[in-house]
Length: 190
Ligand SMILES: Cc1cc2nc3c(=O)[nH]c(=O)nc-3n(C[C@H](O)[C@H](O)[C@H](O)COP(=O)(O)O)c2cc1C
Image (cartoon, rainbow, N blue to C red; front, side):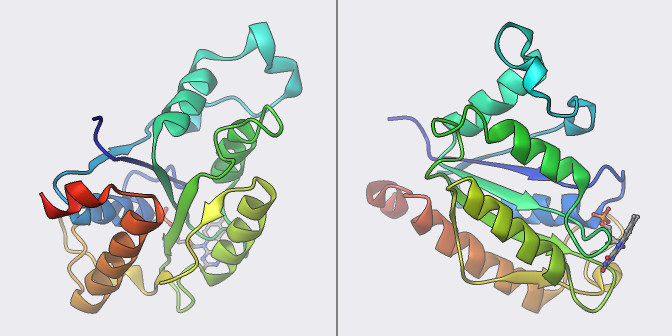
């Protein structure tokens, strides 16, 4: 039996991104029997265009779709840009949302997390993201919600999430997401 697989991507292109660090922390918290993979290099994905479907489908877009289709769950960690999530994250979702009705997000378990340096911790970005994921027929985990505020004080110099309450909350989300994404019961005991 293949291992339960969770894939994730960061909506940030910053080399020192708090959201990429938060995604890494998510990966540290998944159980040992679960495989976790971060989808990298999304900043080079072309802007979605219907003209690039079919024979012209970029190899990177094909791999992205295959990766998400093969996963049991997807986690998205996006910064808030101008009261919404980032253009990079939207582009990824647009690529994943086609072909209409048969794409890899239909019924896919999705978790949304985010970190900002301000006091709202990506609340507005996550609201938009949840709305858009609803359009894709994704199965988005509703609780717990993880809004990492004042991110600069919550990670150490090596980029590790060190704030104990935030780590606990993220661990609760990971736990809930294991069940939400259908992690097999037998493997939970192992
Ligand atoms: C173009 C731009 C717009 C931003 N808009 C917001 C915003 O609306 N709300 C907010 O809390 N932070 C905003 N920020 C700050 C970012 O959320 C913050 O820098 C965050 O750390 C970026 O995430 P990252 O570290 O994962 O790259 C904005 C930053 C940029 C560059």
